[in-house]
Image 1 (cartoon, helix red, strand yellow):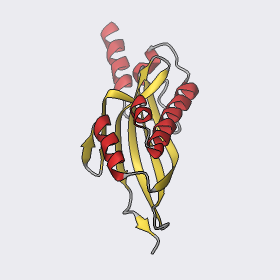
Image 2 (cartoon, one colour):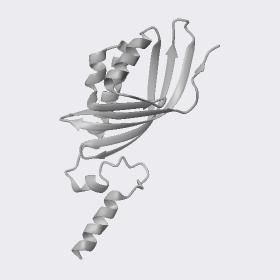
Image 3 (spheres, one colour):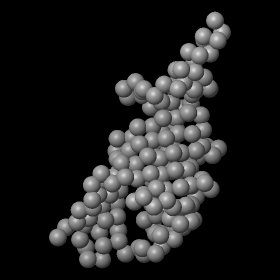
Image 4 (cartoon, one colour):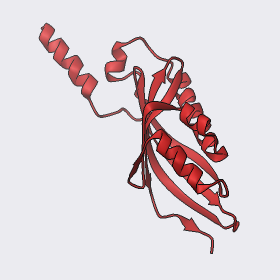
Length: 167
């Protein structure tokens, strides 16, 4: 009987199907741990992501890496970049272009001190020529809890279509 119970618990923890609207905060292995405050954790992850984007917009190298784990890896346009490589790429691009972002459709799962989310990101960019460009991305982000903060460990962005620009 005990073996059956353990097997059932393991099967439930490994289930890949989420009930509609579930954030995953109380599902699977996380249900066996102390309850977390999913709303507070989600808000903290949103804050981390906003701080990271704001630091990138400002060209603030320290602010960029402050939101990342030491093992951070970004996969965008099929180029893997570490935190240091991301900062160098942003600096090489200069700060002439101004851009905005808007996140939507967050789907987050929290299991202990690790969480992952998939979201849509609508970005616009306006260069020196004042022409506006826009693109939409589907992004997956892995967060790791560091004390009370959530840091970005992995970031993958896939363009949903090519950048389109005013003519």
